[in-house]
Structures are given as C-alpha cells and as structure tokens.
Image (tube, rainbow, N blue to C red):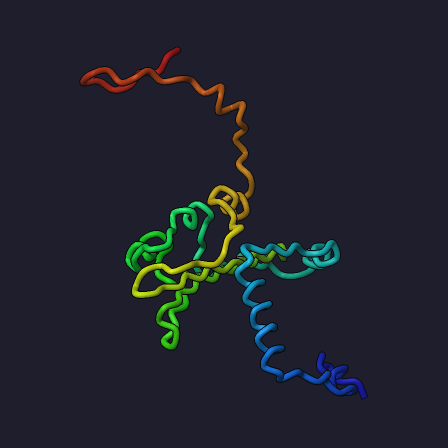
Length: 178
C-alpha cells in the first residue's frame, strides 16, 4: 500500500489550478526576478539537520558560478563597454543566444554544513554599452573569504604589536627595529 516514493502524497489530491492570465504570469515573473536579483541570500541549516549530519558521510563545499563582490559591483558604471565589464566581473556564466544584450552572473555556494548562499548579478547592454545592472547587497571579498575559510585567527591586537619597519635606505634593504 505504501510505496517508498515521496510523491505518493501528491497522488491522493489534485494539484491546485494554475492561473494562465498574462497579468498573473507577468507578476510571478517580476516577483521571481526581484527575488533573484535582490542580492546574496544565505540559508542556514536547522539544528536537527546539523545533528543528523553527524551520522552522514562527509559533504564537500560546492561552489558554482561567478563570485561578484560588492567591491567589484561598485566599479561597474553605466556606459562601460562589454570589454570593461568582462575585465571587472569576468566572463559571464550565462550568455543567452536569444538575449545578446544581457549577461548573467549567478553564484551558488553550498557548504558541507548545510549553509546555502546564492546571488545573481545581471548586466543589460544597449548599443554595446552598459544600460543598467541589477543585483546588490553582495558580500565583500573579506566576508566571502571568512565564510569559506572561517574568520581570521590573527587578532587586531597581534597586528598592532607587530614590529615596525624602517623606511628602506638608498641602495639597501629595510631594517627591522629591535
């Protein structure tokens, strides 16, 4: 009577009707695009999921797409050429044949601990110049490195206590003060 399939419950009741009204379809598309371009979203694993991972095999971190930091996006300006955008953000992951004037930079990071980070930056061109771009609220490069490798273990106090260096002398190497 019971099958091992997770779809069994969906077979007992009919699916809700889907509206094909053009206004409803357009509203859903705009809502989905707004959520995708809202910036980076991070979803944390629940305590139960974290507990259950003790009994599961090792799960590696999976990174896909183009990481675009807030510093990179701050350098992007309206009116820049495609080559300038490619220099700043890299080659786009999605370059649609049917939408030549749109470049998409999606990013996906699934950590082994269940944390999921996604972001998307979309650049629109007109006459081979940036007309507008969407995306924002992105992590900085430091935040991204902290997320991957963990926060830096070197304290700011230890950095302040490091020995100062003298300015290099002409024709010589810098010397360290005792």
